[in-house]
Length: 120
Image 1 (cartoon, rainbow, N blue to C red):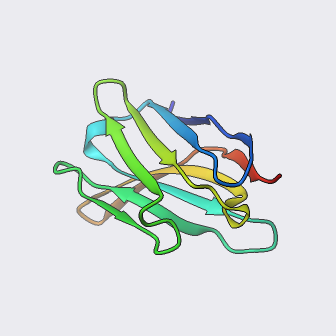
Image 2 (cartoon, rainbow, N blue to C red):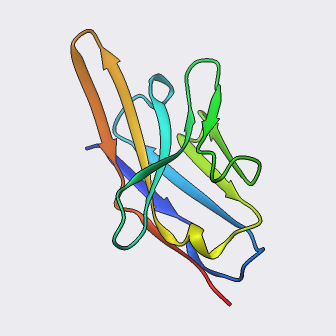
Image 3 (spheres, one colour):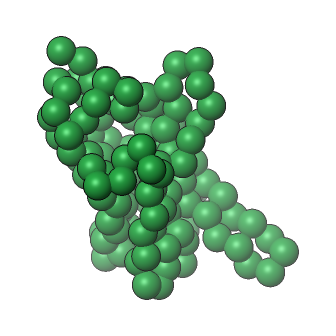
């Protein structure tokens, strides 16, 4: 059974930091590109960060570039999102995503999300 379980969300003051984790199981983790998305109330889900395989190249949304860092530990089947210098506009539910293309088939898995609230 495929599972992506996010953790590490919570309430933090502006300028603070959080580290999100996403533990994966039920599929071959090191064959999947991993992404973090977020969705704020009343807004569409947006892509925050991507880490590819096998090189582990990373890309970021302009809004988080220089503040957020995505990383993965293939031995632990876990992807992380280190978030620094947090702003109120970073408040959202953060979702972990795993995706892989194999020929014409797409394998696309989602976690249930973890809430991040940035407020004083």
